[in-house]
Length: 274
Image (cartoon, rainbow, N blue to C red; front, side, top):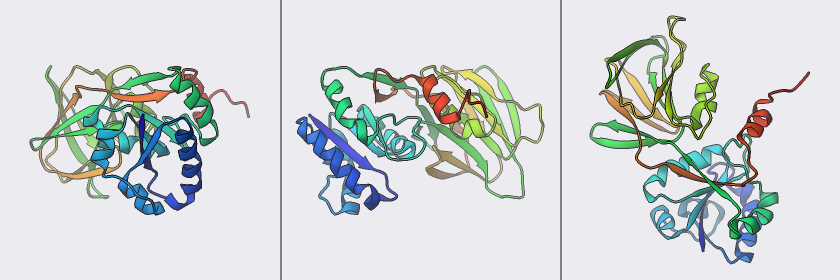
């Protein structure tokens, strides 16, 4: 069995000792560790090209925080490999394994005592290409002092023209990211749907909206704008885009004991009495 590792790009040398510890544990369970070439160069190791890593690995490992996992999920999407997140970051909504409990988890993993969650992905059609987003698609104004008008249509009819700083189109997984900070709803991550949340809307009647995942959404603007995928890939938007549910989900490896509501209470401090 082979595991393909990608390390958090920032503070790579800082997390090197943790990686070496985890690598030793994986190898003690007869799981061969492959390391992405970029990650390997950062810590003075030999690595393999990302495409080869994805092709040869039985599963992938994001060694970092949620951002590392989101990036890996998007980049490896076409290879359809399950992803394990090991959290050496801060938040950890998606990465529920810590370096200290890797040994215990791998014993259960090798016994088949784990689960795979399938998470919806957004497919963005733009200029003849298909782009993918795991968390969200953001259409944002490009000039700080101005507003932007964003027209949204579905196959049903014209939906709305959003006027403000922009629009977030989120997956349920991404509902606890930018969507949440912009006032959008928290949506259980294993459901399927599009969450449309305006950013600083000009009118207070512009509220978040949840649409079924089988809708095709068309978004356009005549103004200078940016198209941002997962907060990590940025494109100049000068044409319409289409939003669809992607054909395949992202597969995340989790502990059987993982409970989403426990994660919400821990990360968002729900139920705490001060």
